[in-house]
Length: 480
Image 1 (tube, rainbow, N blue to C red):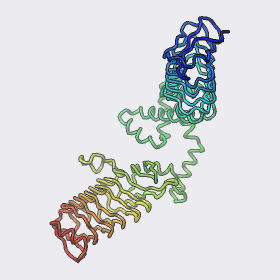
Image 2: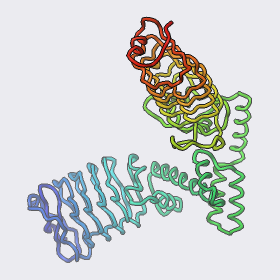
Image 3: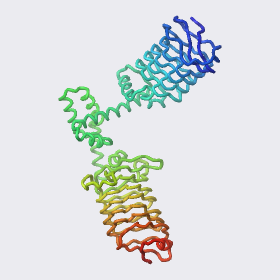
Image 4: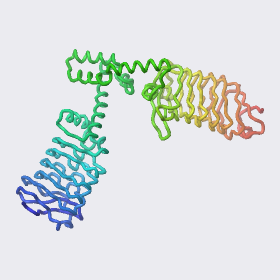
């Protein structure tokens, strides 16, 4: 046994070492701790090396032991807190490594392509693991990861499908992992598997595949289509795909679940059961923000829509742009038959914001109920709602933005609250049926061109701030 060999240490950071061409355990001497740094290892020809790094070294530098083909085992002291980039890269005979309990950082590709490594136990003290730190470690038989790194296995082991292959190895008994990692691997595997099932089923009709995928993104696959896909797979003798489809059906369409689904639908139809979060997710797509939920898209086909005040325990606080219309391009007018549109919409108390163009071009909308809690209506919110007949803007709205009611040709009655202080350009442009409008007394700004209806009678309180505002413009008005 050789007690000492030549190493390179730079102020406590191991940079590399040199050893004789013989088998043995090598313990680098402490006296080398302040040598000038060498950035590449010099061990390349030894037949077998067990390296015991001495106490006092606090880090293993970048590429310190890269391509040390003779290295079979490494013992790292408790003083080491960091292992650098490519530190053990391509040490393809390294079978075992003992990590210290005080280790905090393992940087990118630190142990990449250590193809003989069979066991990996990361201590709980580790705070960060770099990208591809253990990529290409293909012979691992046992892995223990702290809970916070379970969701990062693809990044840590370098590959988008690492979680799927790892879960397969766990199921076949080829790999042992800690329970928290098993749980996450199964969850990730199921999501990818189910996504693959949807694509396989959709592929039976290439022309409508995109439409099917969009439909099934937030909904379960129809059992009839699933059965048809299984029949096609059996006929084609594609046993692996058949197994995949049948596994999906087994988990999603058990007799108990089918019966429970029918029972829920019956109860809901009779009004005996309040909708669940899953029920609302079939009707609305939404995002979660700090204060609550924002409705992004209406996915149903009802003529009368009541937006819920709560989904689960979270309040609905805003309606996003284009939420109630599949039309997205402002300058390209769609056909009225392109989608199902609502006739009446009831917005809940607690809603604070209607964002830009939220109901733009809902051409069948005749009536909308706005809540008292509403504080903001965005630009063009009701633009192109050609069937909208009357609107009562709630108290608390301070500004009617540009194009809010642009081209609402059926609009004949608007109630504007006392809180409104500004009305911007084209707010009521092309509202040909609007014959009169009463303005509150404290309007500070009325843009020229906010309405261009010569037959519109604008009523203003005598001696009000609104009268002073209009006196500075060319907009005709009448006093009350």
